[in-house]
Length: 161
Length: 161
DNA sequence: GGATAATAGTTAAACATTAAACGATCTATT
DNA sequence: AATAGATCGTTTAATGTTTAACTATTATCC
Image (tube, rainbow over all chains, first blue to last red; front, side, top):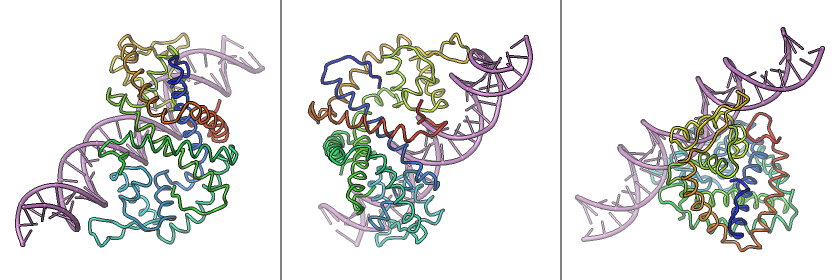
């Protein structure tokens, strides 16, 4: 959104912050993405692996909720992880459910890759000092919660539970 | 990224803020997107229209830089805007360049639509108070600038000029 | 217990997006 | 002026994503 909009002072301040939110998010993501793209992973694949790595096996639906992707997409994401031997589907007690688990290969990949990605993220984020990061985190949390509550659209991937 | 990662305190704070940045950006976007999606516009189409509306005619390359999309994508975005009669390509003095201009129909659409979208954005962002928005804006600006400088990858859409 | 509703995952169609190769045009250098 | 290089836009191929329809399974309710 352009920066030349003139309107009520409050609205302009809100729009300004909105633009900066979009641009900063984009820039930070671009600056950190290379770390996993080098391994041929999409952000969704990395997100799924990271979720399994830190939280343990879970269903595709749970993964989808964690990484903010649709259920349909998770089918492909897990397909591709299985194809590369990084994760496997195991049938659950409830036979509608697939429990997705990291393979040893997937675990080894994350043991090597996660610290690199996390380090890169920290490096970029630590442009801000400790107190600034706390402030930013608190503001974004408040904003994110409120927006998520307002933005729910049934059936989509932004649903609130 | 999960919230169960344990590591150095500084790194955790940075990762926390990173996650919240991604989630808040996503949630705010989702909460506001309906306003232009109702008109059958993608975010890129809306972004292009808004840029032309507030900054006047410009080349596809300039639009691409404003809305953070690739040059190849702009071809399609402008195609679709032309198809709907919202914008036109006009050959520039430099005949490699297309100058893209809003049609009267495109202008009328934005006169009606922009206030609605801006109002929606303001409504969501104003979860935060005025001082908070200023703080958030300043932090995001600092972070975004730094990340953009680090994250440049030549040829891609995240290049810094 | 049997019908009905809800849920997890898959599939298919539509679409936006990107990167890379390419053609056309302009600029710079000699 | 001619050549070489840079720039803008288009095209093409590949890919990720979403929504909606569909199947299989489980839960609910009378």
